[in-house]
Length: 157
Image 1 (cartoon, rainbow, N blue to C red):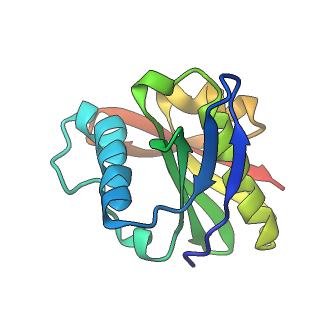
Image 2: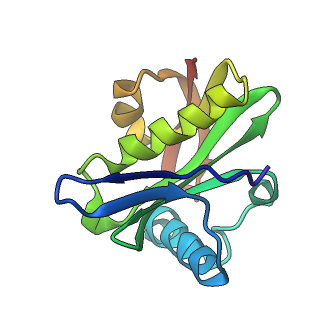
Image 3: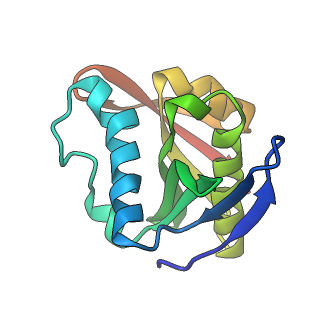
C-alpha cells in the first residue's frame, strides 16, 4: 500500500513544500525520529515504541519544507475504514497549519481509495484540533503509557 502521492506547493514564505512518502533510508530515519520525538518520548516511551506492525501496510506521508522533513502521518485499512495515525509536526512548525495540511492530504488519499469513513485515536490535547476538522468524538479510547487518554474519533467522507 505504499503508493506515493506528491503534492508540491509554496508556503506563505515562498518555501517549496512537498508532501510525499519518504524514499531514502535517511528520510525513513527522520520520519521515525519525528514520530518518536513528538509522540512517544514526551510520555517516557522507550526507543523502538515508535514503530508499529501497521507500518508495513500503511501509506506514509511526510511534509518537506525547503527540503527538510517537518511533519509526518500515515493511513491504513482498519476493518473497512481508513485509520489515520501518528500525525506529528516538528515543534518549530506547530500551530502554523501544517497539521491541517497533513490531515487534508490523508483524507484525500482515503477518498481516492473509496473509503466512506475515517477513524482515528485523538490524544486528549488534540481532540479540539480534530473536532475543528469535522471529526466526532465517540468516547474514550485507549490510555497510552498510563499517562494520556485517547478518544475514538470518526468522520464520514
